[in-house]
Image 1 (tube, rainbow, N blue to C red):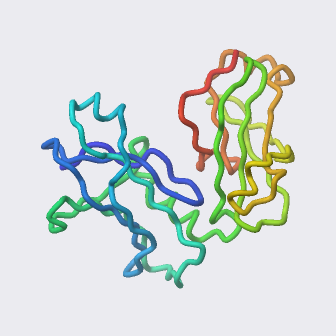
Image 2 (tube, rainbow, N blue to C red; image 1 turned 90 degrees about the vertical axis):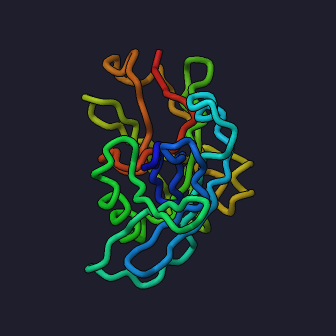
Length: 216
């Protein structure tokens, strides 16, 4: 048995943390679609929060990065995320920590959507209690991008990503895919709500963040 799982499925990577229930390391993780290997990674990211939680001192974090191009995918196949212990003999199915049953469907939605596949981004946080700041992008993408502000029970709000960020040039995306959302211009019903941002209107694909976000 394993503890942990996938925290984020984004259009460009899968990330999370894993260890055996016996408090021993997981060595390797991969994404396959039928017989095709899509991505392979070592479990080699040190997660201080997980180490404190389980009183351990080894790496538990992983990041599976999607390749620029996919092999041909067939409709009768399905995606799986598989982890291996240090012997590479025992394998374990890995799913989302939240809503594990949705894992195959979310993977299929990304891997079979050319427009969605490869999108990347990050929510930097809430600054001065006034702005939600971050960026999205896709390597060599030329068309404009939009994102969606989400909160449970509220209708999503669409925002264009058109703020210039000079740091984006290092990841081969346009420099004007940043966003800066003015919290003071949001409807009052959003006050004191926990929020997230997503690549899609339905909120299936959250833009990664490092902490929970609550509006003032």
